[in-house]
Length: 276
Image (cartoon, rainbow, N blue to C red):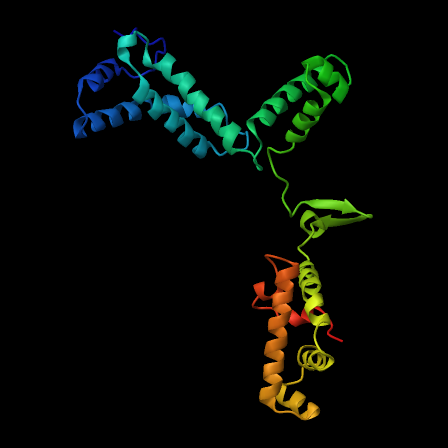
């Protein structure tokens, strides 16, 4: 039989727990389980309140604590002889601590680095309290870590929370938002790849084919206008363009397997290089 709880304001659920063990699965057991959980929710909320003002809302902390409470109710065995409260408190606080450890980081940090962060943070505080400058070398000597591990732990100190891109930064005497200093993807990179992929095929074309491609894709002339300038039919110009493009794509596939201008249907492949 479970011993009496040492917490004066704890609900008396000893009989309910004994009945939970005896009841078979079904609606009656689920209803009794829910009543027990609700009876102990105030204790879970008090434990959650201890961790307020640490970057998480109290409502979210209460939900995490409630999950820990549910786990404690499901795992508790009154036959062991221990009151529920001493059993539940470590389970609930452990769930809250896991939440902070695994869910509150702005970036994913491996567990090993998280542990190094804790060691480095404590060593930094201890050395500073003793009047010693907490340099990486001194922290390494104090903790037995290597300087590389100290560096990794120190970097993780800044990974728990992110800086808003709207944060103000000072640069060259003026103030800019952090977002204004972030780089952007240069679309010209893909164009460089396409240009280099198309070059070998274009170089193999006859001068007349190069001329047709130049007039069509660089001068922006219509097929009819090109036909009139060259003295051929518009159908002939269309066939020249189609055949030239086919040969360029094949050549690009030979020189750059897995990538060629045809991989981008929204881009005219021959704009990647000057045919003349």
